[in-house]
Image 1 (cartoon, rainbow, N blue to C red):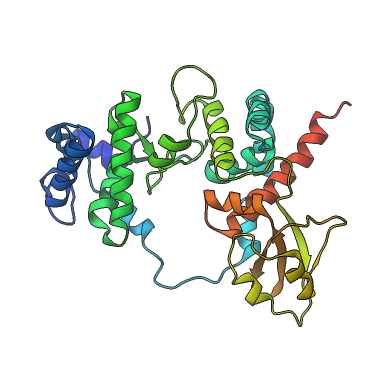
Image 2: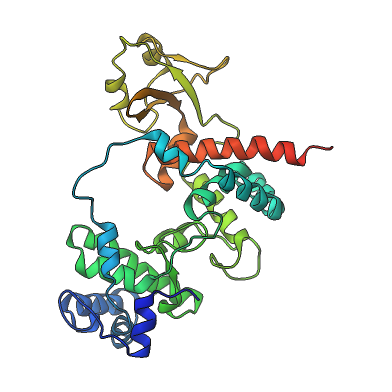
Length: 336
């Protein structure tokens, strides 16, 4: 089981429990109100909830990671892309695909999501399960819920969901580990997403995102399908944008595909495809300082990927990694 250094040191009594507001989480008025709410809304024993929070600890690193940087960096698509489209990430994706080909095909058949998309998301999120995070989830979420006012409501909600998830899975809430924001396992689902979208895809009677990749595969596919993935439809295609076009206005219309083909054509934008879909799209700008901006037309399935992470850079990295994996996998699987 993964543990942070702070968690291990606390359990051994080597350091005292930190806390910006002082003392144990269990002594904090907002945590006591949380425990009272868990009893009133969900029938938990408030003292048990407080005892669990008392065993948690504040994670100063979580606060460092969640805060926006003091100075915003310049967006660079090429720099972002390079983080996820290197030879090791592609080779790792092919190996993951080969190992779990049966589950990936089952997910494609059941949910309509191609194997390469599922593999790419897991590859971008956790490097195929290698980097799932080592923060104790209760401690990370409690830190954000009680010591980060800008998003306290969101993370109190996720802490609530984690307690509910632990009760459903008959686990100690403190047994979950993940990212600094409380995302768990291969697919990096928050507790609310696990409860809403996770599936027992290998049929063994429980959902395990730490040790059972099949559950992660089925859950990612289910998540995308539930958010509107359309089987067999285009994700995105490159777009040729003339210099005189008011591209920024179209980009600013939003990430949801709402630009009619007529609107795109009237702006002089041409899809770099022989048969572009006659469906609404969004204009995606992938800017790199010192280089021409790449433009793409994103369709419904592109938008669905952004429901996983609300970033056009993220969605395009997933899509490009997926295409690279698909092309490589076809070559590997082809008869020699």
